[in-house]
Image (cartoon, rainbow, N blue to C red; front, side):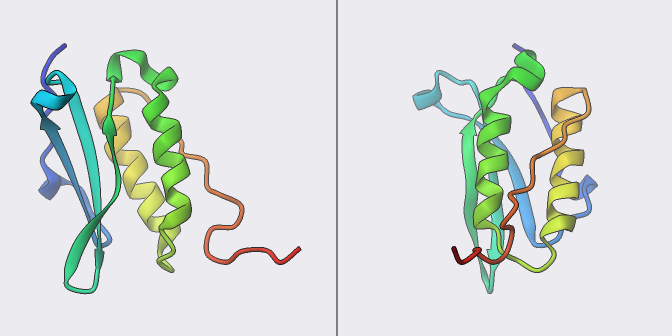
Length: 109
């Protein structure tokens, strides 16, 4: 597997930072971490091993989509579209994330 490199500065970001790491605990597989700003600090909203060779079948894409539920910033749609651009570059094919139906507020049943 080729090393994946990204330049976080080349993406327009709404308060988030993408990082790709190669750690011993992951057998040096690429680990994508998405950190979002909450005030003065950045916190991880997603971190997981990715496998771009699997393309759309990579379970990490589903995990990233699921983590969007926890991003409740009012500019959530913009964050989602910016994240799709990053993932499209990493996976070399269009990636469309599923937006949770209850993006910001929970429905009362």
